[in-house]
Image 1 (cartoon, chains in turn orange, blue):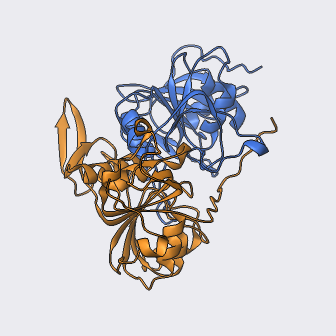
Image 2: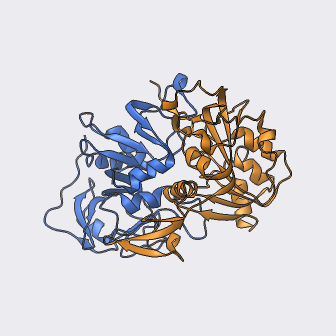
Image 3: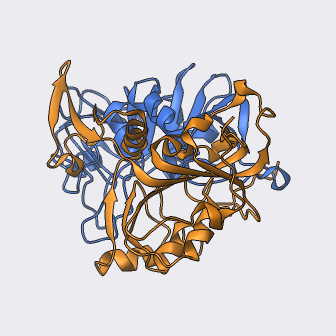
Length: 232
Length: 219
């Protein structure tokens, strides 16, 4: 087996440079690579393009990178819940490319799978279609979307092994598996890292071939955005 | 006039046995509370779950288990988890039978606008464009008029649209209406205490009224 382990987040992000294109797994704050984001915040980076379904909140997740002015452009599907984001967007400091969520997921999947472009019905007849190639298939209109890749993809899994195999938990899976395939260098942080051979191959969600570096993260906060409970 | 709960209750009557359903944020989420217990349906959450259960009790909260509104949830028996790409494959591929979502405007040919108001902060479309582009049946929950009394059931949407020719049925605070395949709204039911004349006067788009329009009844 090829060993992919690094000691910690700082070592994992050592060669990330300014103006890179980065992908971050997660839906809201669920399943985000908390340790890698913290390590990136310690570096003197600017001009980053961040591909992530959301943009964190003011004081957590990618919101912290926005606050530090590290980000030039966000590529996301939904960016509410972030006042600093709104301020930078309205002042023109930040570029934003809003993409339908399913299109974003598929563009990342396609990027990782060697598919340069595909046709989707999402956005036909809307401003999302402006400037895009349109085609009719079986009487219905579709628009062309291109695959997305990144210099680095940061993903968070529940368990992983030293060979880079990953298992996700709950809805923390979300964009993580596709992003793992679309990074030139994919860095996985996991809650529990075990030696190769200890995870059942039948249960692997992301095969280690997609992962270049893996480490066991620490101090997961797993912040909840909407704490909804029933009395039971 | 219907309140939000009554709109949700009325929409719940449209649910059929065996359906996989995606519920949007807001009133559509409430629909889950009123689906008759004798029906077997599965609720899809586009962040990667089939089988949304009720909110958890305090001791069962799991930060790794949320719905598309980022609320903590539980899973019912027989649930399945998957990634975002698979989730939208289900949606785009037509495997989800029914989508219920909110709208700011609907036009008489079934266009929907619900993601952007010019001049206001744009938060993004999330999964709405994918959902409306593919669902075989889309029911919209909305207010019939804006706060200043302007009709939201229009000849053409004035706001940036989310999808074209996709809405099949609308439940508002005043009425239940179908969107006809050839264009135009068809009045099906009135809210308690609301007259046909009021609905006619508050619907800007083409409105078809045929025969006696029954008044909705709630328990």
